[in-house]
Image (tube, rainbow, N blue to C red):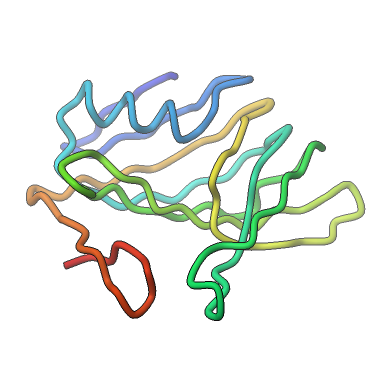
Length: 138
């Protein structure tokens, strides 16, 4: 990961073959990030993307093993049960320029991903919500 710091915020370049969640979680721990918001773009070679299923109160996941353009990547860094937690959504485009969007579970970068990270000076926690079976911002 290439890191540039600007007045407390960061421009990050995720390197080829890095897994996005692992990279961002490691970065957050190393730099003692309390919470934040980010957006980005780039490309990936594989991912797991899904959508929330209200009836199951869980996600339906789809594994994609092909090059996808990351047209939009948005997310936040918070805390869940005392640990850093990432909530990330993406709009991805295939070789035919057809898009799909959803909640990310995994994303392997290739060739690059550029992320602008805005840091919050307060630790934001998530709390379990029984209605949705999700950990929501408290």
